[in-house]
Amino acid sequence: MKFADLHLHTNFSDGTFSPEELVTHAQKFGLACIALTDHDTVEGCARAAAACVAAGMEFISGTELTAEHEETELHVLGYFVDTKNEKLLTEIAKFQTVRQNRIHQMVARINEMGVPIAVESVFALANCKSPGRPHVARALVKAGLVKSLDEAFERFLKKGRPAWVPKSKISALEAIELVHQAGGLAVMAHPGLNRTDEVIPALVEAGLDGIECFHTKHSTAMSAHYLEIADKFHLLVTGGSDCHGFSKGKPLIGGIKLPYEHVEKLKAKVDEQKFSTTDEHR
Ligand code: AMP
Ligand code: ZN
Ligand code: FE
Ligand code: FE
Image (tube, rainbow, N blue to C red; front, side, top):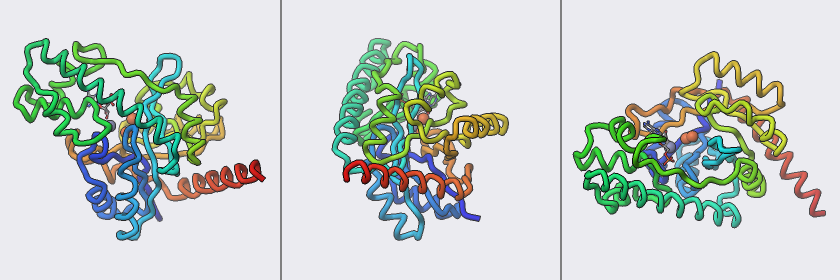
C-alpha cells in the first residue's frame, strides 16, 4: 500500500521544518507522496519538489488560503497549482502584506498591555513573507515574556483576546476561482475544525473539488461524517496531518496516512480540467 500526507507546513509559513527537513521526515514515515500547503504562499514548493525527487517521492504543489464565506472563516487548500501563475502570485503577495501589517498591529497591542516584545524580533524569528500568530507566540516565549505558546494564545492572540486582530480575507468563492485559474484543485480544509457544514453547498456550487476528510484533529466519527458528505456532493477525498514541525509540540507528520488511491483520483480530475481548458482555447 502507498500512502500520502497532503497537508504540511514549512518555515516558509508557520512550520519549523525547512522543505528538505520535511521531506526527510516524510521519507522516514514511508510516505509515497506529499503536498506542501503553507499558508498564503507557494514559495517552499520548488525546494520541496527537488528534495522529493532526490528521495524518490512524489510531490504535489499546494497552498492553504485563509478565506471566509458569510463571515465564517475557512481554509481552502489549492493542489497542483502552477506556482508561477501570475494572478495567484499577485493575490498571494496581497495576503502576505495583510499578514505583515497584522503582526505590527498585534505587537502594538501587546506592547500597550505592558509586554515589551519588539516587532523586529517577531519578523526575525518568522523570517518569511507569510508570518502569523504562531510567530508572535514563539517570539514571546523566546524572549521569556510568556512560559508557553498556549499562554501566548490564551493571554493575547486567541480570537477575542486583546491582541487578536481580525484579518481581511479573500472570499471562499474567489479562493476557489483563484486556485482553478492557476490550474489547481480547490479543497476545503479540516471542515471539522471550523464546524462549517452549512457553507458546503455554496462552495460546491462554486466548483469545490474536494474535502479534507482525514485530519489530525478529526475524530473517527468526524472523518466518517465528511466521507458521507464527500459522497453526497461528489467531492474528492483528501487528508493530511497539518504538521507544523515543532511549532506546536511534537511533529504530526506520519499521523495521517491517506491511501494513495485518493491521490490518483485527484490527478485524474486535474488532468480532466487541463483537457477541458485546452478545448476552450481551440
Ligand atoms: P494566523 O494565520 O496568523 O491567524 O494563525 C493561525 C495559526 O495559529 C494556525 O496554524 C493555528 O493552528 C494556530 N493557532 C490558532 N489558535 C491557536 C492556539 N490557541 N494555540 C496554538 N496555535 C494556535
Ligand atoms: Zn499554520
Ligand atoms: Fe488550516
Ligand atoms: Fe494548515
